[in-house]
Image (cartoon, rainbow, N blue to C red; front, side, top):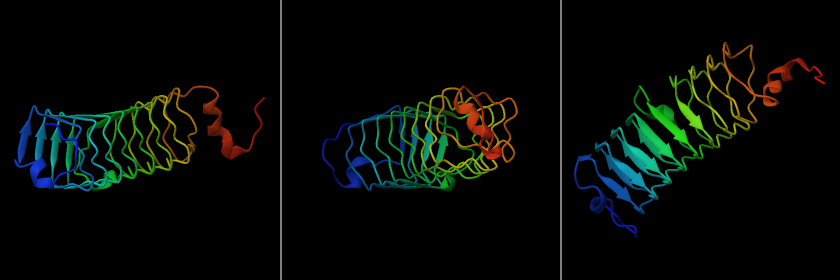
Length: 201
C-alpha cells in the first residue's frame, strides 16, 4: 500500500486485521486507529507523527525510516517489533500494554518515557536518547551500544549485565543503579565516579 498525499483515516485502514502487508510512504500525521491488528507487516518511510492509536496490536512487525514522533499508543501491544532509522521523539511508552518487546537501531528517541518498564534484553543501538526517562526501568542484559544518553535519567534502573560499550553522555549513579556485570568503555565509564568529586589522571 502506497500513498503520497494525506487522505482520511478511513481510506488507509479499512480492516481490523492485516497480515504480511507493506505500508510504504503513507502520509497521515494525526491518524487515529482503534482496535486494529498488524501481524508480520512492514512500515517503510511513513509519516505518521502525532498518531493516536488505541488498543492496537503489532506482532512481528518492522518500522523502517518512519516518523512516529509525539504519537500515543494507549493500551497498544508490541511483540517482537523492530524500529530501524525511525523518529520516535516524545513518546510515552508507559501507556502501552505489557510486556513490551521492542528494539531500536539508528532511531531518535529523545524526550521519551520508559519509566518503570520491564525492558530486559532490549536493543537500543546507535540511537539518540536525550532527555529521556528510564527511572526504575529494568534494563538488565540490554544492548545500549553507541547511543547518546545526554541528560537521560537512569535513577534506580537495573543495568545488570547491560552492554553500554560505545555509549556516550550517560549519567549513572552506581549506588542508585544496579550495574553488576554491566559493560562500559573508556573514557565514558569515568562518569560513574562523578559523584565522588575525585580527580583521575
